[in-house]
Length: 497
Image 1 (cartoon, rainbow, N blue to C red):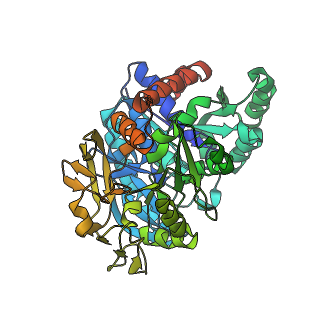
Image 2 (image 1 turned 120 degrees about the vertical axis):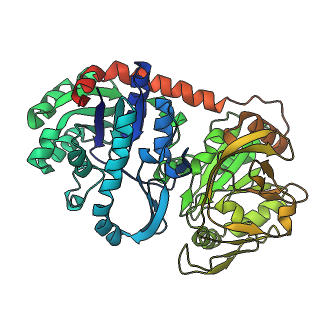
């Protein structure tokens, strides 16, 4: 017997990704083998698969929840935005082309067979495939050639549960309005609904459930209280990091803490920021204050460390960095004795020049970097996607993570690598160790390295949280939360096919 069920949402950010992760862990705990699946995802937060491809990082968390290896087939279509209107199109783990929004609408019809192929591979291998939609099925202006929501559900003949977000208000209108915009066959395909992110007394929404069911004919699968521990899990996209910027604008308070052991870390938010979950382990540390610096804001002068993050379009973000005046802030930071780390695209920015002779990232063929280390980067069409492990040379701490980048660096600075990995030396560092660069994502998830690195920034007897263990514990808490508040037995009956 095989099972498949799709969780669609009344809109973006209603909690679909975490619902899928939590349900996956709950079903695994019941003894089923489970695979997560998202037919189409749009994100610059990606993860490397066991096949050496890339998929959305939300599916990496869901695969972890399901305790299965991450596969190309768990997210067969991934769109990685490069500009406001264009994106790289990744099919079953590998980039096939770049397309603007209108062009992508035309080629979507050719991608459905790839999604169905991947889905069927998972269905034949696992007991249960739990599927996440994208955006909302009520976006009927995009219904033609849809492969993300009802277009996929109807092609694969999969039952659907619709999730609404009561925390943002108007959840009855969200669900009833979605019902009104669906076709007759789509309305029939929806077997129930979930009210997510509820705060307060659940019984106060009893009448709301009666009204919603009466208006739609759909059965309630449960009301899920707000899961506060969700903040411990990696966010899916860059929009999720914006609120933390506004919440940490009390930069002036840093001045009063100069005598404390707190480490202050600043990360500029690039316009094409990618793989920003690199910083989650640092954010979780009680001895660290990490601020994501928005466009138009200065990099705080009391920062101990500035980290330049990954970017989906390094040349565009190099220009963006200079437009904000962050290049001036960074050089002032170094003069004050602060340290600087660049990761992936941020690493490439540390050098003298970034070249793109084939126009892989766009029309700009060359841009000057920060000129802080003696090397140059040349973009090429060969993307490096690789799980890695090795050591941090200064501390000899064991590290692991992944490579996901275009471009090759060459120059004298590379004679002083930052890491020594299985694939060879990685990154570089200045003679005094104040400027560091690496291609390795996931570096700070290594507890021993993170402890050593933080103590090097500001010596102090400190204890480091076990980041990976905390994520596992949070996923278990999430599954227990959903077992308590969702009718998972009924959802299993619906999913049987």
